[in-house]
Length: 246
Length: 332
Image (cartoon, rainbow over all chains, first blue to last red; front, side, top):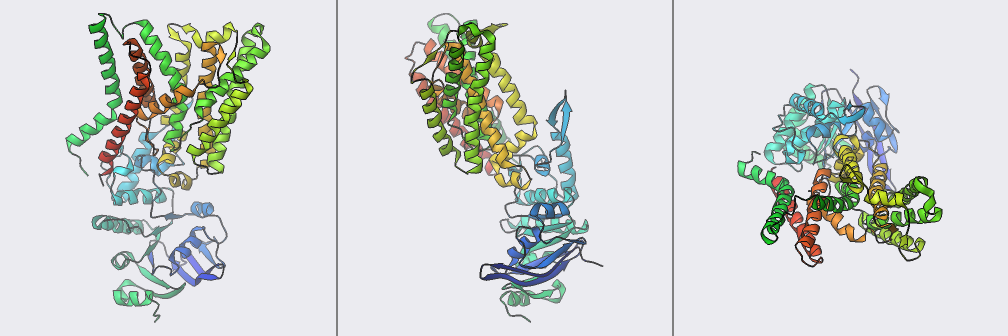
């Protein structure tokens, strides 16, 4: 089976500083790969090379059989890789439907003039969110009135509604309370069931063990080790994060 | 997550407060008129027309401004864009003389609007491409538009003699003064733009979170330029009406209205931080201010009290806005 995403020998140099020295890993369909590592280990640089924000100094990324290296961030999104940032990039004053369709709104013509099809977009949002196991109490309310987990779900819904095959999530639980962290973990499970590949960045050990099919530990710009959660424990992961390679 | 009925009642009350306030002051002036003079305040054609004309003057500046404020920006230059357009229109009419008829007036209207569009393009370019904060950028063009208008006008008011132009400012069609009809048409177009089009959604999203529209692939710079051009355009229309009404173009035609226009937008429910506000709200805001203006004159108080009254209403509007934020912001 060929991997959904395959990163080979990624290296990124900023001036004299080598942020990422040599990172290779694969992500399969419906698999959640966690990139774990301490601050400065190179996690963010790696995902930015995948999402097209940075061009790698060396190495390449293949996705769904296509070479992505050197393509623009926009082209990579269109190819099916969606990045969900910590700030979620939601318009807090709009309802879930408009957030789902932002930039690609549906309209219908009345007397030749285009009018936003708010109801239709709202219904679609409710459907997509339902498929993620989220029930929105009031789909006409702006998303600022929703919980952190629900807001995360809207950002994820936007990704999968536009046919993302791989979702990159950057510390999705960092700003959330405990019940909402659980909601996000449940969302990740459902995304996996839909066959979506996930790269999750985290340095929170309980999250890492709860979500990961494979854990890839980065330390000082290289892969310090790769483990399945069943073969390892907190202690070993922390030791690898600190740079004690095994 | 569930709100108790008390909070949601209070919230709808705060959302509708401008309507309530309008009814309240109308009631107040009506009661005053009945008790003091034994006559009516509200139920006279003259009163209604005067209030409507005053409101439409404010509205022509406030409508474009509403869009800019919803997007999280401000346009201070509108006061002098109005004057600039007024002077330019008057100069064109004066140049061709009173024999030119409608042809001259239509040409003058076109050139006057072009003058406004130039100011809007400069504002949009400064904010979108040079990233100048809109408060500073439009304060700069406020000064420039004022100076240029005074220079081309030779430092004086440009009076004209044109029956056609006077018709635009003072004509009445089916009982409705022309300025009111013009403001109503612009209000309907802008209300459609803001509530029913993609452009409107992107304007709200821009006011809430610029990253949300940028990552959705919207050309934010172009959007900002269009917003500032629309704002200048409605202010320019205000200037054309002014020249028609007074048969003269004055560089400071819009100056006294700026405060009222900004106030109308905020009374109408907009927020300084952007992402909120509606055209209907702004219309109510403008009517409230016009009622205060006319009502105070009607009740025989020195006219300067209107500035105090409008200032107070602005402060109330901001307090209402903040309590609304507190009510909606604590739900998560």
